[in-house]
Length: 327
Image (cartoon, rainbow, N blue to C red; front, top):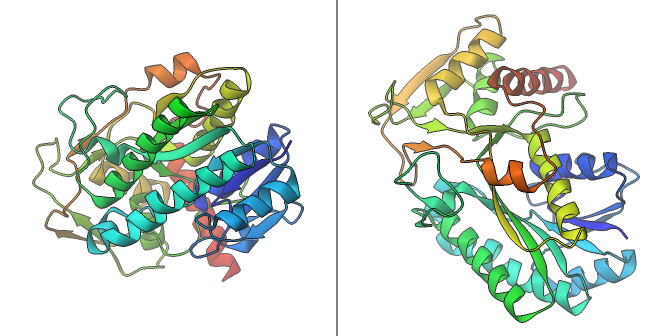
């Protein structure tokens, strides 16, 4: 039976669609195109334009396409934006997800893979951070995603329903075969750095240079988007095999500072110069966020294929260069 992928026209969602199709699964995409692009969905993949929070639209998509399981990626995902407009994040993430899960249960869809975030940890006291660490988010984005995690836990305790929550660390890169990448202007560091080195933006801004890290900038765990996409397939297969509900970190367990990531882009582009400006810290940015990845490696049939910063940067840069040629 087909898999319903919400947000399947977005950056991560479009790569998830590719991964499921490569694994032999039929896929249906539900997306309202508020941030996604219709062109990101392959022409032979059924597409439903609709709001994930519209229970009637979800129910219709499930019934019409005989959906058997769901991968829920639709939602808002910017920490700074969530601080400026917190109610939007509670509506788009927590409220819409409640409607979506309710519609799934009503239509007998009882296996779900959910897109969560490392932002639920806030500022972890121990790094690398494990799934058992305290969840004390410091942004409305992290709070809204944690609320959905709790909702799934409570739903599973009261219904015949199982889920896998994937807590994403920093997602970057593009499909190595050039089929898909990240559209639009990037807020994400590696994409923004690629845009800067190719002349698509005037400068790159570094927020915070006084953290207690080796070079004063934030440290993050970058995971290639194609590896993350395959983790969704492995998560669903776990549920299909009778596995219980899980919460898993999705990262590599490797820390990269902001300045290291920028330099990797500069080197990959053969040293092309671009302006970098330092700015004060942003609210909602933890100093260091690195995943403890033992659980996902031990539990799922998943091994990263692209776990090196150079690969992540090269694929992101190739995608941006192709966009320059197309524009």
